[in-house]
Length: 222
Image (cartoon, rainbow, N blue to C red; front, side, top):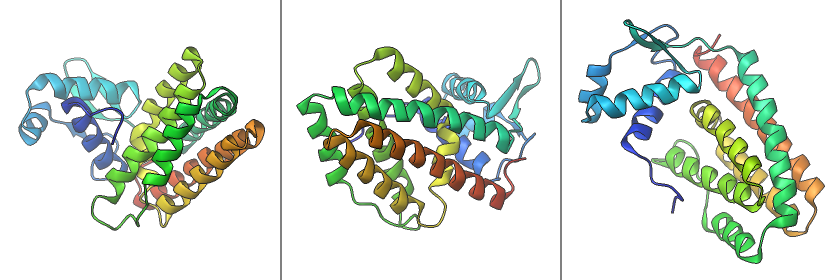
């Protein structure tokens, strides 16, 4: 079960993000608030909240008195963000290895053991893995017992969330990502904090490379 239930604004945000990533909404395309509200059966309030969140993530530009449009994002900018996230995630894995309580370790083990990845083509595979993936990293953040670090990691992850989700559309990426999680977890359970950090860093950089391949393939990024 997910640790957090998505709000209507989040559902709208993820739906828009996926269309942008897949190239169905190209860079510079205008976003119609009224059409969005009708499509999701929502008022303008959650639509505007979703657009503000996407703007904060750099995926959408909001122009006063002219509305919102899809932003232009470069691979270089995404690479820089993933590099920062990789180092932050590595630190989280290291701290969590040394600081997690027995209960927190069990929760992480249970999450990993209770999930079985399937190929991206299967119905619901992407959404299911996205939920599991978010929960896996959230449990590690909590296990650091460093509120500032956890908050920083969560903010970076949220900023990259629309792009990170797209990486799982790559061939066998879901299975690869799950295996990388397993390797990180095994080191954490052995108390090998430095090894866990190195593997977590490599995991995030693999995600960055998978995303770059996908985005270039669909022509959704400059």
